[in-house]
Length: 396
Image 1 (tube, rainbow, N blue to C red):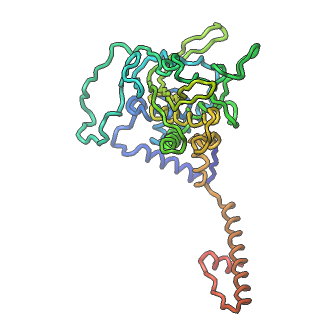
Image 2: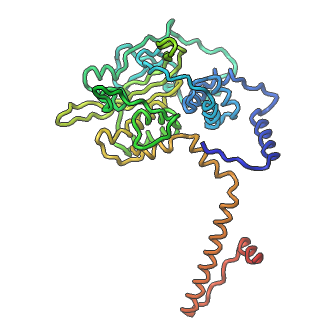
Image 3: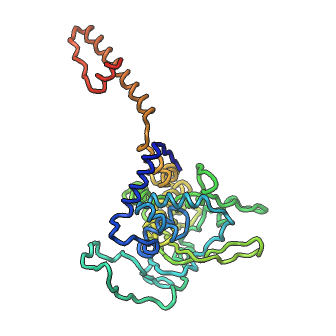
């Protein structure tokens, strides 16, 4: 995070008061509550949790309210709060095959084991503003299952059992992990929140980076792969949204203890197949996972993740989405906004140095032109006088 704020304290205090007043809006209108934001702006809350790397809907709603609806500012608040929290340990890997489903769609099989579940979505809605909808009114009651969606096998597992999809490789401890061997423990999974990003990054670190990456950035990169800037045309094997149990192993108890459920969106893409003289042809995969119902983010992440695997799959890197350093170094919107927005802050000394330099260069250029004109018997053109230069010359 890049934070640099200096200025007159009274002016800053007043700026805070002005912002608070603007954020509050018309005092005659009832103030938004955190509960309303958490309950009625769920997609915004989910994005703040995903990119803030902290699952807490109430806290994310508070951050959105404090930021006046600026989601990147809210993500900044959540990310900063996260750094103050003590770390009790690492949770056990979640089993998304056991997810309590609220939504599940597949673009490759119409009839798949466990069935498809449309769930809450605006995929099929008309993109027209509904002027007739009253602010407060009775909503039609949807049909809902008596019990939450039962767990269903993942489509990629079905393809994997037939040997038509590559193993989920490239992660420490996973099948094909080269760090494993007789008498050796698999390499530890990287932790991007503890160790700085370095290159080349393992798939585990790449996935962590993309999971907290900016949705808009990933969406643009994913779009670029569809327009030919990486040979990467996928099928959505499965997109599922639902709740999974989080378990934490307690040293005192010596076993995993359930601590709660979180809502996740998971997307696995099935991409063009590969093969060789010794390996059978298999589909490859891309993977995306995000907190909450963040389908666009999970799908974009899966496309970019697959593009970043170009090197390990023996593909030529030709597009920005395949450039690991470019993608991972610019995906974090907190870092990006810090470096971009700091340009608003005073740079008086830096600019004065640049100003002095360009004035000196301009004088030297004019002198050279005058000499060249005399050598060629040309009448030199009068120098252009501006307010800045005239002021400087007057001062000198």
